Length: 74
Image 1 (tube, rainbow, N blue to C red):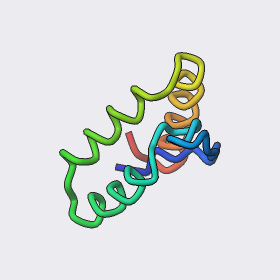
Image 2 (image 1 turned 60 degrees about the vertical axis):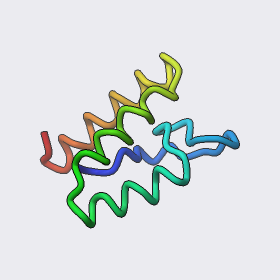
Image 3 (image 1 turned 90 degrees about the vertical axis):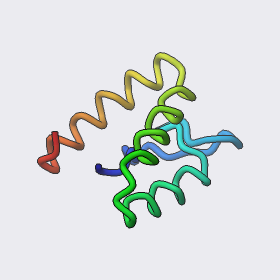
Image 4 (image 1 turned 180 degrees about the horizontal axis):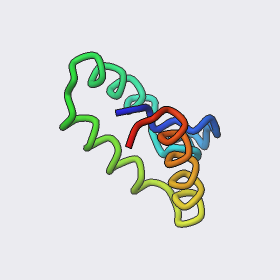
């Protein structure tokens, strides 16, 4: 699974308003990718999306789908 990052990074003091991940999530994502731990990746994905408001989520979703298409991942 490709990173949730859509290169719209920022810091609101709690999580990135671009992807919804915390710094802990970002490190956990990297470790889960290295360990091929899809359960952790899915958990981080769900929790991160839940942090975004409707407008942020819509933007993230659109950009993430474009990123996946560009990288050839469904």
